[in-house]
Length: 323
Length: 290
Image (tube, rainbow over all chains, first blue to last red; front, side, top):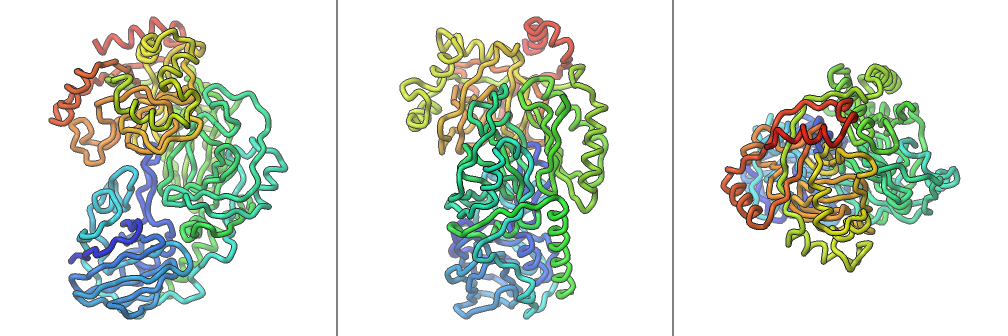
């Protein structure tokens, strides 16, 4: 079966859990920005956790189903409508042939995940169905979906309607998002006072926030420790000899506006980084809207690993509740 | 001085071999990352060599971060100082149409973001590197071979480091503010690195020209990109070949008919021999292209 795209939304892409193994050639992981929401949506409709789904940002698509299916929408809080009637988020529901799925305005969060029983069945590209739009491959023809597209859907395993992830297992960003970060990388390039300011200040998500990275504004500029520029680094104090960028790494070009790289990260470049947002908080970034307040919270490796294990325990609880 | 090790969150180890660029730092990064690949360490998911540093991504549920750190330090000690580096690699000839109309049109659109709005990028680069004419500058840029010292930023983009003595290295700052547009296959320059933009998009490197030769093809229809969509690997050697408009148009027609044959030859490189006499070594290296 296929799903017909009537309206595509803003930048709706096909995503799964991504394609590891090619970062050394500049090809990033890609995949859903909020992986817990993506996995949950798949579990709700009886798919493998890593099946391909639609990720829509800020604005939902309008989709027509050409056959019966089971659908679940997770992630941001955006009213879900089936032929104009409201449906619950984080809950599986039946869709009949010819029915139209659409969405109202976004309330909180940033990205929804639309899973369909059987999964979106575009061809694998380097082992993944995720769209990598900058490199023009993956997903459907290497681009966000467009009006008139027909999205192929795989064979469903017969999922039930009315399965739900309990409210207390859905994480939502608070009024001020707290992003835990491990200082490191080129942390020594800034003064002790600037390092303190970085974690003390409240930042705001800038409009330049997408799958490649999130930019933040509003905190004090960083001051650098004096140096002779190393050969090949460039003359700006925020320059380094071009190196690799970790996922979640926080670069601060010119010392002014931090950028946290996300799933479609550029794999390297010539800006220093003060540290890295821990793996447990990457999903949360994917749910931040521009102008949201955010603070970076300093953690050590022990704290990062504890947060990681808490996150895995939450995923296990969701799995157990839907088994 | 030993390398500097630091964690990039709970899933990466970042190793700065040297804080400045040099061929020996690059060779050390390459040899350690090769050793990491050969070691097949459980839990390692990405092995990324860069110009003078490298990065390992790992799954901390499969290997403790401190254990991996210790293992990398052991492999570094084993790799030595990198100066005895020998490498079986390829030399690839890349035709370049310097001062082409397309990068010229683009650079004119972004003059207010440039250090010298009255000159073109290549005129500026020639002047600040003490070349009397742009022609002399092109001769210097295309005369000696280059190492692909990193692949990345975006898919398949090579960073290239010129195989000449440090005092002969060209250095050019990046644009004051990055452009929002760069033509696909632009030959660029920033810091001490040349590059080829694999896709159209934003960029901060100075623009010198354009190559007709595809280096990235996600459709994998290009004859020499059938096996993999990216042409370059770290450790490849590149030689620029200046071409004129007529040659550019011919090459482009060949690319479009999918009959373009790139000049790629296998070579053995020895860093020790190279450092004994760079000009003579390069002359010998480039003979295989004739």
